[in-house]
Each structure stands twice: as C-alpha cells, then as structure tokens.
Length: 220
Image 1 (cartoon, rainbow, N blue to C red):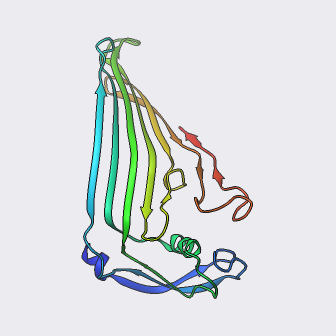
Image 2 (image 1 turned 180 degrees about the horizontal axis):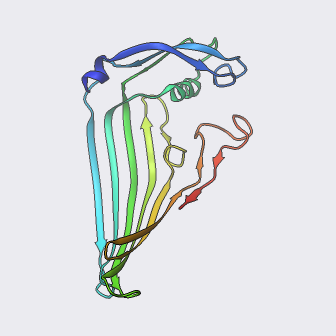
Image 3 (image 1 turned 90 degrees about the horizontal axis):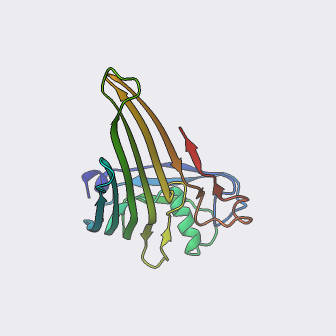
C-alpha cells in the first residue's frame, strides 16, 4: 500500500440519520465517531487478470470493425475502504446487536478478494460520402458498450455480494455517436444509455424500502 493508505488516518464524526441504523432501525438521528484513512497492517495486493479479445473486419464492408473484449480480474488482499454505508450493512449481515453504533473504523483494509468480470463491445464504421460536394465529406458511426457480470468484494466469513446491477455498477452502459465531416466542419450526435439498476443489493422491497429500483436512462 501507499504511505497514505498506511499512515494517513483521521478521526471525526458522521451523522447517522433516523432509520439508517440497521441494528436499531427505529433509533433517532445521532452522531457516531468515524475514523478513516491509513492502516499500517495492510499487505500488498496480488492480482490475476485474464482477457480475451476478438476483432472482426469483414471484407464485404470496408472500414467496418466489430470487437469484443472479455475480462476477468481477481485481486487477492485487495486494498480498499468499505465506506460508512457498507460497514453498517455488514454489521447487520453479521448479526450485530444493539446498542447504537458509536465507533466506525473506515480504514484501508485487505478484503479477502475483489472480483470484476465483464465484457466490452465496440462497433465502428466510417466512409467517404458526397452530399454537398466541393470539399471532402465523410460520416462515421461508433457504438461502445460495457457489460458487467460481477463486481464483488469477498470478505472472510461473509457470503460475497455481487454489486453488478446497483447504482454504482450498472450492468449495461452504452454510448453511440454519429459524426458528419466536411472540410473543417464537423458535427457529432451522441447518445448515452445507463441500464436499470437497484439502489442497494441488500435492501428488500416492502421492508427496507418501498421501491428499490432505478429506471434506465437515455440522454442525448
């Protein structure tokens, strides 16, 4: 770990809003002591990465390229901070009991294993055209998409939680663009897509929240 991850530690306070304490859900808002930052006990990370990429450029469509890259990344003893919300959720999962939470240690730690699996897709096409004439003209299209199959942090003694499909890690992200060029003039139209997600993979609808889903979003 870096010097900051080992020795830069700070202590302050964090507000626990009413209803946010998973151990005492009916507790009013209160302040817990929060310690963040360095941990001299962390060990080096060990990473294993497997990737497979394929590119197809058909003869019948000049300048058309279609590619896919599949990746599987596993990090042993990954260094990370859990964050206040994750720590509170983990307290609940591991069966912590009242009274109120008074101290939260959000320091850098070695989680048992971090896993990220997914795939990148890309389609691109470009060609010269003649619409107005007079100067060189061309059009170009590009589609890039990412699919996340798994994003998980596995802690010793706790079942892993796959966060793919949550607000922070949507399963699908995509960007499509269309460009037209004529001499020094260039115009681009771009559209982005963000897949439907859930707010928290540990929440149960009707118990922890009325509606745990977040609608997909498309914007240009």
